[in-house]
Image 1 (tube, rainbow, N blue to C red):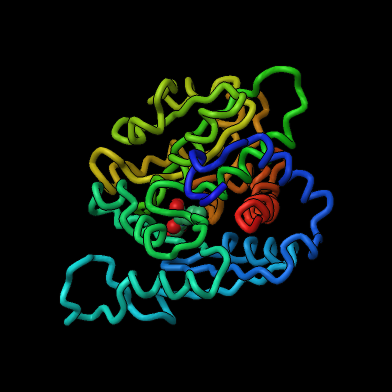
Image 2 (image 1 turned 30 degrees about the horizontal axis):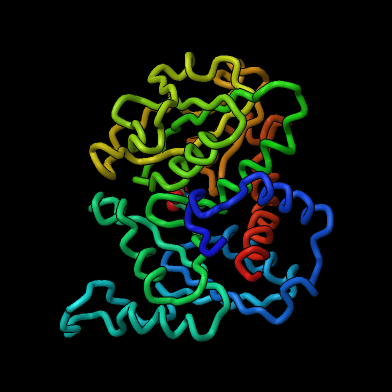
Length: 313
Ligand code: SN0
């Protein structure tokens, strides 16, 4: 594996998941990637991604160095051919290339603008890092995907599933007050389409994901119909894709509570965090035995460890 920016970069998804599970059983192996250096660049906020990737690097004997570039770095120019007489002090051509000389792997977090679909969906910022860093690039969530989260999610489903049939996995939209990226649901859908599960989506009209992230997947606009018989429910808000970046609905009847849970097959309930309690998922569910969001968060360490171990080979 050369880079890790989407499931398409992974040769063997099962092997990556199995390796993550085995790291969970035996995490501290500091001889494995001793002395390697991992740069983690954040253009946007992070709690789990930042901390779990740092812990993962430490477990491998590597060192992770974090740059909160939005706060501590120079403002970056991504456009080529520009005369830089505005507020941007450094071009990505130099910034990425320099970091490429300091580190063995470069992790990058960039959120989408949610105003310019073409730029966001062509992953302009991530592509610039890939082009100019000259070393393996690790996505820490990009404009359209969050593959470290999806790997941890798949691992979590695998850990919790003991029955001898495919689990029914449903991704459900939930309300939110802000316009959020489609990266987490896109990525989850992409990994579930690839996994050995029965996957479907439920969201209000106007909230269908981009076509490439729901190819061959049933989408229900009636949440009750969508949730029926689910073994796992992934709850997440996202902004509209078609009316790009817009908040078209804040319908709180989609908030995930006991009424929704009752429609499922006593489902395990998942969320990538941060979750707005009461609005996205109700306390009655988050504080119940059905919620496995903390397992997902814990598994972020082993997902990152599995990926770093490959990228640092
Ligand atoms: C991000 C998202 O992509 O939805 C990060 C998830 C890992 N979430 C948020 O930005 C939540 C912000 C908020 O105000 O609730």
